[in-house]
Length: 248
Ligand code: PXP
Image (cartoon, rainbow, N blue to C red; front, side):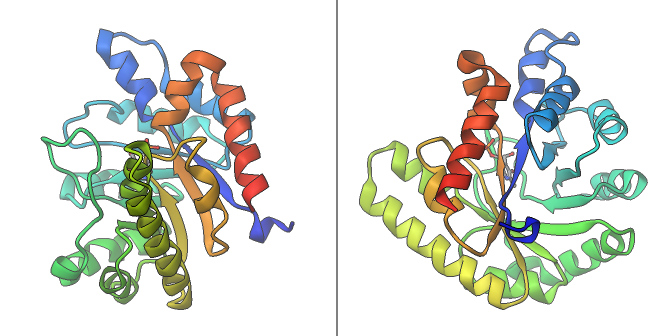
């Protein structure tokens, strides 16, 4: 397998910060987790600086930029404040996600179709600054077309509905979500977009997504951090990596 065809694993360390913030101190440290993940074979680190700073805070992003040798995928909402931060730090990649204050996690993909002109203007300076711009969207051809038109290089397909259906034991819904993800990965690749996927992936759900030949990167967080409580972060990442490679 050449490096170009290798499926990359981005480890999202947001929920190490969730745990830290539950007590308001310094531990556990998300940067320490990111460095451990890097040593354990993560190809990149993902962190979402939310508007309400409920987990990752500004200082974490600064510290990650300084400490990491693998690329940082900086997830953010399309706000002016976040654009300023991204333009100051120039992370390797910026993933634009929808954000609602009341949601527990990123519930759906971005609606690119209905804010196409605004998003095109928004991402242009980020691209000029050298950031790879990724757009987090559902498995929907119209959204993919719009992402391609605004000049995004990457789309990340939202795997949350597929994972939720699996967890609920609704295998008909799971299979139909997987079919849509499969078709849309092929479709997006044909439009010249690099395809990533993520949200809610677990040991049980990762293989069919990792098997999609057009998918180049998976971003996985909550499950790995949860599993780290039981088996440790390094073995959890190693096991995820093993399952991804086996599916490939
Ligand atoms: N990809 C994107 C764009 C996300 O917003 C998230 C959640 O922050 C993830 C991947 C990772 O999802 P999870 O933590 O459920 O693995």
